[in-house]
Length: 626
Image (cartoon, rainbow, N blue to C red; front, side, top):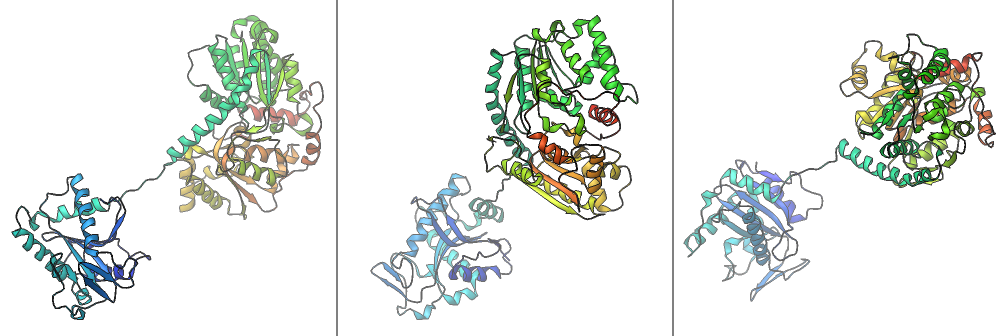
């Protein structure tokens, strides 16, 4: 059987093309032949696209171009053709083939694929007429040969017909003056090269890396538009950027720190979350200037001359002992501070904790905020580790830290696909306080809430990860849970051996060479990922939050808005979108900010104490792989 192109006849093929395809498809003993049907001649010498019904490349014989006609009435008079029921009945089929032949010959010569002596013949095949139906005994004249015509009878012997025409062509032109014809020059290898050139195969697909690069370029352009507000620093020493998730607050703080350092100011860029500090370090990049980027706990350890927190450190260490030691060390060694610019991201995490505020003041040059510049950013709605009665008001806290501070409200979303953001808002039943979108509304984004039956959590997670990994790389997807390593679905799963093939696949995705990251929502706060899968969204998890006086709705808000483009929520039956505390918190959210600072309680409040330990990200509870 010859090599057929296409391998299957297209539905749009006309009757004559179907007849030729069927005739050639069944050939035996012609495995080195190449047959192309319905070949479009886009690079036509006449400048217009043409088509050849069939091209047969027969090694050792030549190349035959075929024009098939299904007309049941044909007339030829005075060099003019008339083919009844044809779209262009007077078009000369042989002239049509001549144009295609010149085009193919020129195309192959440009690519050095034609020696010049390969026979290239033409054939008009009347598939609905027999030779005997012509009243003229010899249908030919000076303009063409009778052997350049074929009939319906010849469909039963296509190979013989092709070989006959090519033999007649070679015999005639082999005797012609100045014409070189050598069928032997068309070897099987040469025939394959010609066929591959006439109908080349290629494919193109954007890789995950390509798509990621394009997204990063777009995201960077949107974020850079936000930098205009940093011009306020020229006339205002202290700024507080306040806004919901996705408005580029972290970017603004990082750029402000980079600008300050470039201007020769000793600069600190800090936050509470260790992973967030790593993200800020990536935003700032390598810098030859005097800038320190670290989480506040690491800064205090450095000031105290310590390398790490003590084993089993509790809330008292993080909120009292370490800050007190840091204050004492700064009093004795002020050179360990002396920052002319202090930038704090996720400020709501430390707002209202008196000793931490004192540490920030002491880190300023001269221990006086009035001599330094403060650039702060926060979102009061992301205080997910503080009990309802212990939440701080970050804006008043910022004003107390840096008198004369200018409050800048950033409300334009430039990080989350608008469709995803609207879906999150609708699902959680809460307005997200965005004034508009910098991202185009057409940006692909989706929220998928998947009902999960009891006992099917792991298969659901595997399915969700596979779906997200079709669009994003493993380093762009993260699994989040309300719980940490010991209690989360992923943590418990990885602590045992996989029980079946599906579980082995899931284990490879979560702990292999290019593993998908997984962590608690608390550790992921402030961080972005192209896609997020939320697990452990269960009635028990919501009850756990209620028992600790934590907002379940806020927790879901933080988890879902970590996603930039895709978010999958694996939701167990009966899992609520709001907890018991969210009704009163919802009312509190619409109140105007009260003057002064609500201080996060003292040691007598065990709930707040445990929360700060977990926020520090350095104890076992509530944390998992970063």
